[in-house]
Image (cartoon, rainbow, N blue to C red; front, side):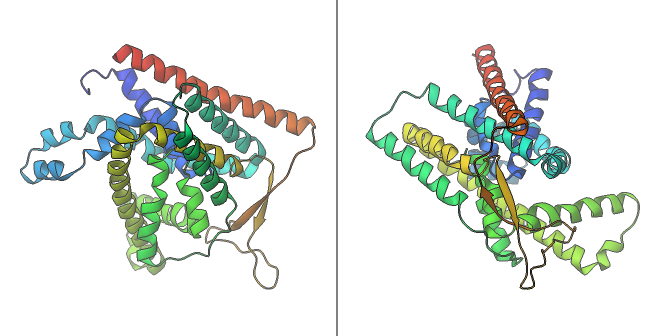
Amino acid sequence: MESTRTFKDKLFLILKGLGMGAANKVPGISGGVVAFVAGFYEEFIYSLQRINATAFKLILNGHFKAFYKYINGRFLGLLFFGMIVSYFSVSKILDYLIKHNELYVWSVFFGMILGSIYYLSKDFKDWKITTYAALGIGAAIGISISFLDPATQNDNLWFVFICGIISVSGMTLPGFSGSFILILLGNYVLLLVDSVNALYDTFFEILGGNFSFVDNVERIKMLKVLAVFTLGSLVGLITFSHVLNYILKNYKSVTTASIIGFIVGSLGVVWPWKKTIYKNDNTGEYLVDSTGKLIVENYKRYWPEFDFETSLAIIYIAIGIAIVLSLEWYGRKTKKINA
């Protein structure tokens, strides 16, 4: 599988990782959708579930090359490299764009979700009572989640570990936004902003020969939080991959229908026309995080008036749909070449 990958395939795999990483960072968007639509979802799940007892035995016995080949290491390595780069670069660009062009960014995301629904449903033919029920349940759960009120921030390390397990589900379960779940759990800013910024600052301080961070209690605390969150994410990623691999093998139609339902339900999260509601204290003052950003509490959705801004947003929705259809086209082309 790995030896047949050309340089172009490897480059596109890194770009897919960039896409997954960026999607996982944005509330309402699932990295699993990128994998599903781009045509490498099943290989992704299959490769992850190969991280098992056999893989650990190969490591313990010193068979590193066999381990690398067994887990499809080049595929996972390139994909995760793209995700890591995205985490510290593309995601920051997205943060900037959301801050300054929120309506149009959400419009592109909304279009991508619409395109994903079309892609998943157009070739699905196994509609029956069980799959319709799975579709309805998936949609109901997705809609219900999108209207829940966020909890307050909690930096207890056990809770952070659980957040890691739950949030990573967005990478393995298309339509289930891990970052939005972190908002509901109250820890989005802590885990995807503050702790990441702490690592970013520490990294550059070390490069500059500055090790004063070891005496910074708050910095060490943030690094511990990020380490525990990462550990929880790895545990969740491997666990979910084994469960999903079994489900896809034995209940593929019901699983696909549920995924379509999840994605339909997530449309409420990425609805472009919404007003941001920020947290405030008892005096009415808005609350900010450690970086000075206002802390989002929830969103109030509304139906837009048809004007120039709305027309432009609709164009961006079309662009989002086109992006997904382009990914689908590339995924089909790649499968034909490798067949």
